[in-house]
Length: 242
Ligand code: F6R
Image (cartoon, rainbow, N blue to C red; front, side):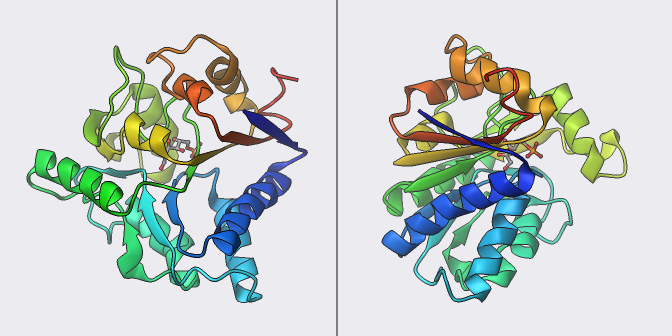
């Protein structure tokens, strides 16, 4: 595991964007695993800036996102498809047909989960997976549980997660209770993992995840077993570690 410390959010974002940029420059047809949430917004902004300067070409890239809320269409402003389109895809030359986000409106959830796992397999797996970390230690929406859930599945969101995500909705009651998420297996099979974290609210969970016992009660703790994990975090998130 490599831990790269950044003084602040902007620097964290730039360092993480540099790693993604290097991946795409070296391997133009990479499969990027992408995340939503507040943390990677600066990464996407930086990548867009470099794209506009002609420094990166996404035309051969494919992407698979980690998760999507159940019950929200891609046009809903809080859906993760909408987030990805507005914060990244609409601003770069990554062909929209190369992008994948679970379908939150799927009637047959099991079939959708299988379809999503097949998409990942048919792309040959993920080359570089970008991850954020939730206050519960979740990655994607793999919440604390008795087991590590391996494949794409539907999860009931933890109350702490609903409260954390309520800031994007009118109120907590509007946050969907369920989400579809990529499983731990696809995440762990990614060739490279890039975890970004910022802010003091992530300090304790980041420390427990990277140095505590490996347990499904702290889903991100499984990342300790990956042989190519890079963590880019700001000083506040690393405060307990350093
Ligand atoms: C979202 C995702 C989640 C977030 C996590 C942190 O696609 O995978 O695991 O990374 O909830 O969210 P923020 O960055 O908003 O603190």
